Length: 473
Picture 1 (cartoon, rainbow, N blue to C red):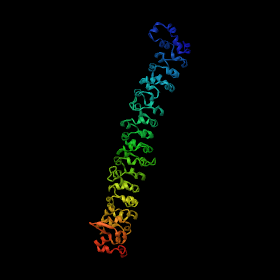
Picture 2 (picture 1 turned 90 degrees about the vertical axis):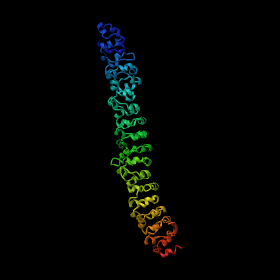
Picture 3 (picture 1 turned 135 degrees about the vertical axis):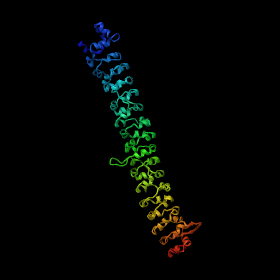
Picture 4 (picture 1 turned 60 degrees about the horizontal axis):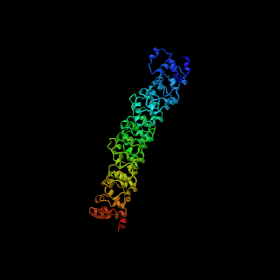
């Protein structure tokens, strides 16, 4: 029988009747009718036939295929692989399926792959992206780990979310590099429950396309740890709609500057900042607030600045550094309506004339006498009539003789009788002719400032220099 191993399988099968006729009846009975090929191949020990001599096609009995060794399976040509029927594929053992080469697997048709049983799938090296959801249920973590990034990119949402043989979902077993290849469109289909299952390592690997594909609901579903894992370069990729979905707890997780990077807070763009909800702003910690830049402060809204942050009794505005506060536009500052106090003299010094003019009467009245005394000529020059009327007794008295000439006639027109009565000799001496000529309506009467002094107190009027009085007529 040794000479038989030099014959091709086709020749052996073709001569099977002749060979079979020389086999005893007792041996034949062990196989029964219809198993001639199997009996002959078993009889001649098929595993001894060189792989190069094997010739298979769709007509080859499934029983014959099961006798082939791993070496013989691996030696089958691409044409032979393509010729295998669904039934023939199903007949292969786990070891035989495992023996298929990468080239052979690539030659398998969709129908052939679909024919693989659960046990065969476990042993197969066929790319998982070619398998059905049911088949993936039998796949292993090792098979997932073997996927290339190109293969991962072909996985659908249904495939990614399928639970593997071990009970974990396919996508949770992807490496960071593999996960970065997941289709953005597939990621966008993840339920909020699945979003929470994405590892922080995978989150850190997200690409711009993946990040921008996330829905507002998915953004809101991210855990604090996942938020903190997002690369700073990806934070700026978030849309205003996505930023608006950030929650209080998520906001508190945004990273700050470190030796490693600039942090997520600093990465927020001028377009994104106004979209942060007041709820999100409430989650800010002091270290995060200290990370805000001047460009970010410029675009903060009044509603955001009014928020009391992280359980603190102070508003965001109050917790900003003086250097950052001065960058807030006057128009925004005006909308705070006294909700934000001007806390330090340093801050007053830094306020621009426009910002001073935008202060509410409540904010003006809240200034300390030290702050009022620190107002510059340029700042005093923009004080309005309404703001002047809001000055308290102490504030009027704190104005220095050097500051008085800087008050505009518009500001002087806002004085009331009680305030006028408080002017000291030094302040009156410092008044300009134009200021003294300014008409002031108070106590239901309209008089010039000079005449109000005369009406209120002869002593005050007497403080006006004679050289100035001559110019009043």
